[in-house]
Amino acid sequence: MKEIGNIASAETALLNELKEVFSHIRLAGKTESANLEIGLEVLQTLRSLVYENMNQLQHEALILKVVKLLEAEFYPSVAIRWLWNPRQTGRKDEPDLCGVDDRRRVIVSAEVTSSQKPGGAISKRMAQTLAKLSTMPGDKYYVVISEQMECSAKSKLASLGYDITVLRI
Image (cartoon, rainbow, N blue to C red; front, side):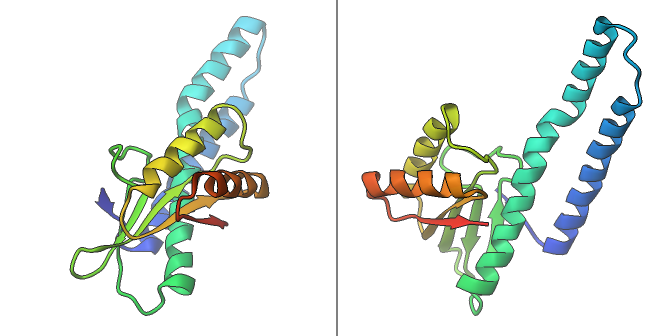
């Protein structure tokens, strides 16, 4: 896991990456598709340039929002050092976000999803993520962005009995 460091600097780096993604999208939008083959080539190139970043940038930005929320509303008087896996690249035993105190004790373990709807593979992944999170130390948070995901997570938690707080941002 990497230390987040300065939130404003991390947000600036994200904004710069986001601008690059939009630049690729605008460039592809200007390309005329004379035929199906050219159009599909442009689409394939666009996908390779922006698809993964579209997912990862949302994930990363959401983690930063979570840090600000937790600091402001849940841990305002606790000095927490924040560690993260910004690009969903952590090991299976690591959360997306981890907060440790000055004695390196884990205070917070959080998993974050930017998925909008809980269906199929996303629902299965949610159950796996909640099971993983349930084994982690500290206060546990599962962070979602939609009411549908919140309801699904709370329903799963009710049946599984895990002590995890669902936060909708």
